[in-house]
Image (cartoon, rainbow, N blue to C red; front, side, top):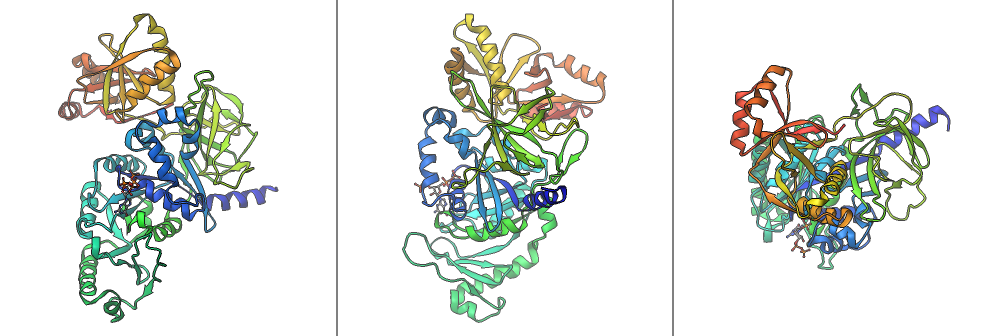
Length: 536
Ligand code: G4P
């Protein structure tokens, strides 16, 4: 291919890619929505396929499930499908028992996110946490309010809830007509169209959408009944005064979220969501490296590792590193420089995540994810690239853990194996590890509480080390930074018993309560108490 032709192909491939993750609280409908999206993408042909897999994994953590069903989870971590000429990469954001730092980190590898809100429950804790991560990079977010077939909160209450609790403007794209038993469908605000709700499984063909000529069209009364029409008119009048019109730029800047209403389990409102998503969501964007921003259309291949998945074969200790392609083209068998070590790596056995029936795909483009099997060379945050430039990507950080436990080693003679195991598991990003400045405690830190069980199980299985973990009085940890060395020293001296270092030797401080954290922030305004730390 000539240089010019290659540049044109690269531009086209970038333009048609959409890489995203779903943020939601458990049970809001993420799995159901994923399944419907995959049905549209033709990846699965049977409703229930994703669900069945989830049910199989439900009782225990992802890791324990992989033990039984090796490899499955690796491929379901990235789901790629084609729709209407677009290549869509949906990255799994593990929830439920699998909620962990990976869930956060996956969100640093996407270009946009889809937020699912349960219309009965409104904004819930996990969504809030995930939203905070999205906010770090001003990730654009589209919202799907789910379960309109149930009696939930009114649309105004829901929009208010999102705006107040998540601090983002809402721009409704559709508006529900009734809800619960009275749910008739949605009014498409952009097209002036009514889409009728049909619950799935009745065997009836969905009713065609009806176009109305504005809200004053008497056809509206005939279609949905006079009282529902009057209510719709009143609500939309109110919305006009109080709501935000859709603004593409504000959406792309992460300031506004377009909102769709529907029912995932009934496959209602999902196609509209998908089509708007493809139209408005961003293609791969420039990514920040230490020295500069890298454009996806730059011809030299580059990418960053954002997740490591252990393959769980104790005999081999192989791991799959997930790399997001940030620029250029990846082709199987190519060589790329591993920037942290300065060595070249031959990428001959990389896994290219592709929808079914498209085997033999040999290349990947910006926004795509590839899996690179390795024996521990690759770590989270590592950059791989072509060319001589010493490129190092930023923005794939460690996140401050929210749960803490002390390690108790059952057999003291296994201390060395424990150290080795913890070193490798922290490199993998499976857990974080801290040592106090005073005392001999070994402190584990996790974002999801079940990570402790997974670590204990893995230490036993892979390193033959039995541990127990004990709760301890830590509520939060923050990495410390500041330009004033004297103030930092004073903080350290006055709080020696709270000082810890992480597995890479970075200084952090622990707090017994949120209140103590706030107090320290007040007392030491010159110090930055960081919730994230760059991995490399
Ligand atoms: P998650 O991945 O976010 O945890 O949620 P998931 O899709 O598993 O959905 C959680 C529950 O909510 C499921 O019910 C699912 O069927 C239901 N659900 C999803 N979308 C809708 C909807 O639009 N309306 C209603 N009424 N329910 C919805 P479940 O009882 O846990 O499982 P199942 O046995 O029904 O599959």
